[in-house]
Image (tube, rainbow, N blue to C red; front, top):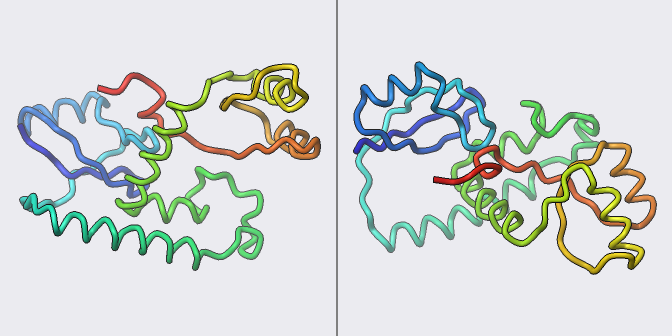
Amino acid sequence: MKVLDLQCARSHGFEGWFGSEEDFQSQLARGLVQCPICDSAQITKKLSAPRLNLKSVREASTEDATQSIALRADSMPDNSQKGLKNVPLNSPEHPMQALMRNPEFQAAYMHMAKEVLAKTEDVGTQFASEARKIHYGEEPERGIRGQVSRDEALELLDEGIDVMPLPLPAALKGTLQ
């Protein structure tokens, strides 16, 4: 089994496990290797070195990564200060994209996204309607997720209904292997 360090065109790093180098090249040529963060099929293999499984090093690294992510988030300018108020989250200019290139942030984000998926109900395009029913007591309170347009989200906020955009990685939307 070969474990390869891979990277997509947006610089998201991830691992891929393949039976051989030929297996990797074959899957890559057929467009079967995709980034778990953005679903891009433009993948390159990064140089990698053998890893040592040292628990104390890994624990220290996790603490350092958490502090590093917090410092980066604290130092990021507000979108409105950079004139990015209407820049889509998936745009390369959005500050979130710089964070998504950080492997520690990617791992933390994937963990958080899995928690959200496990603890919420997907109501799809009925999100605005379901959120209103819950807010006004017509339905029992529960965690929901779904899709709304920007205008619908603003209307919900105007009504006092808290909503938050949360782009979920494509890898989490289907069945995980």
